[in-house]
Length: 152
Image 1 (cartoon, helix red, strand yellow):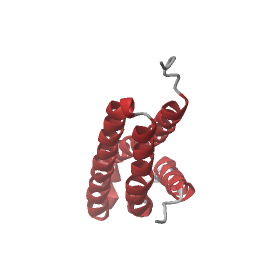
Image 2 (cartoon, helix red, strand yellow; image 1 turned 60 degrees about the horizontal axis):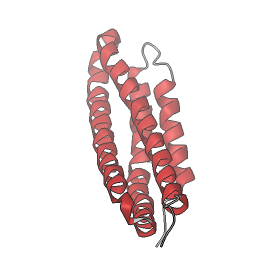
Image 3 (cartoon, one colour; image 1 turned 180 degrees about the horizontal axis):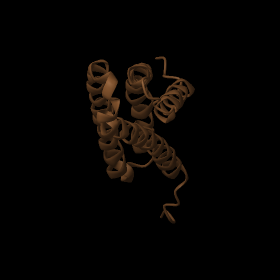
Image 4 (cartoon, helix red, strand yellow; image 1 turned 30 degrees about the vertical axis):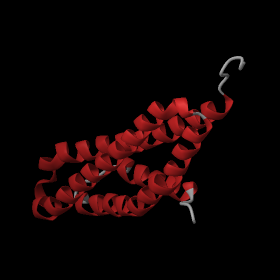
């Protein structure tokens, strides 16, 4: 079974971050939004593959090594679902902005709040993804290295 290459997802997330952080120059709202949309579409398949293959494997290893961590794995799985929902919400927000941008071009300032929301939500998504990766690594290490006391 082939696994998603984490560096590919990492690169896609970094590209998304750069697109979001790139200033939206007046008159370029449509171009900027298209760049964000394309970056999101680059993340989509890698994200799904990474969550399904890599995370599920890690979750299985954690519970196999330490069945007492079932609750933590349940919380990690819930966060994966939250990540997918957050991604879809971000994609919807981007798509709506992409649809509105060409019609409002002369008055792009009217969409300032939507652009700011997209930037904020996009960067929050990237941080959420990074935090989940750190949490999984931490619980995986804990499952294998945790001191369980003296056995009889």
